[in-house]
Image 1 (cartoon, rainbow over the protein chains, first blue to last red):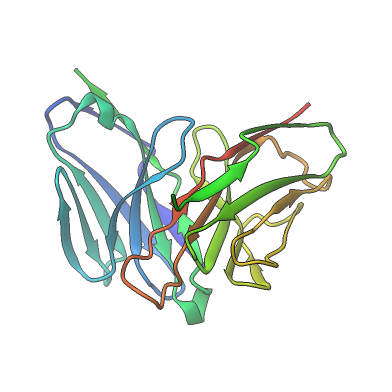
Image 2: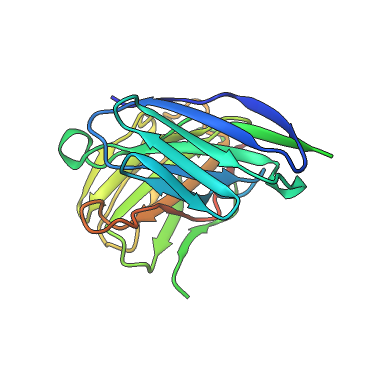
Length: 113
Length: 116
């Protein structure tokens, strides 16, 4: 099966950096995704990692280590609008999990002035 | 414009009634997913489909049913067997994971179901 763990909540100050960790166990691996979700809205895609290393996209970066079953999302130069939940999701392999896409419980980030 | 559409946005159901939530996409995606989200929680997978006329149970399929008769459509029925159906339901679609790197899931705007 697939199991994904991430912290429930984090607080940071405007302009600072926050790192959200995600650990996973999965039946095969075919990519890890990070999504942002504001309250009452649908999730929106932030980043995708399938190979080890760092992917950078503006203020957001995501890192993956497949051997450790570990990823993090780094948010730099925090803005008030970054207050949201951040969801880690893993896709299992086609053979082992039928490309099943499983989400973690989400990390609620609160940005304070 | 291409996208994924869920309807209705809000739905009220009486206890003991079945109700069907609609999900349509015109993105030509093979894979479609249904998730349930409770307040302050993450997304839990109900059912998913990788191809027309085929679907698999997710982690919380009991009390739900789906069909995938057309590539564009993946309706979810919440049956009376679902004991606690009040939740936010999200539908998503993506290209097949074997096709390309860009396999992120795109979400509809969700349906908020309330049992009254």
